[in-house]
Amino acid sequence: MRKGVLEMCILSIIADKDVYASDIIDLLKSAELIVVEGTLYPLLTRLKNDGLTTYRWEESRSGPPRKYYQITESGKIVLSGYKSDWKALVRMVDQIISNSEI
Image (cartoon, rainbow, N blue to C red; front, side, top):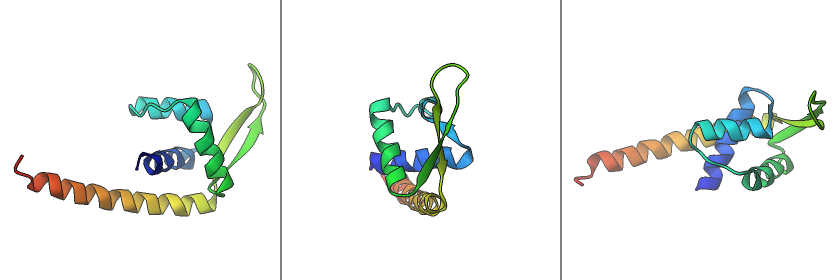
């Protein structure tokens, strides 16, 4: 389940603007989702291999060129499905926990 949530979060971040991997980590951390590079980079590679993201290289003023990730049209479609599924799951869980006597 966490894998799907991370994919949805990463695609959501990339959908807003082109981002560098460390920007993704910072945004996830600010939301208290702690993700290390060893988790993020394989996921970014998988998203690219699945055609959901792409990237471009940009020269950096302080160091080597940076890889900036972008969402593809296919990625936008998949993200829309993730968001619908997420909202349905939240509704179902909210219904269960609000009806619970515990």
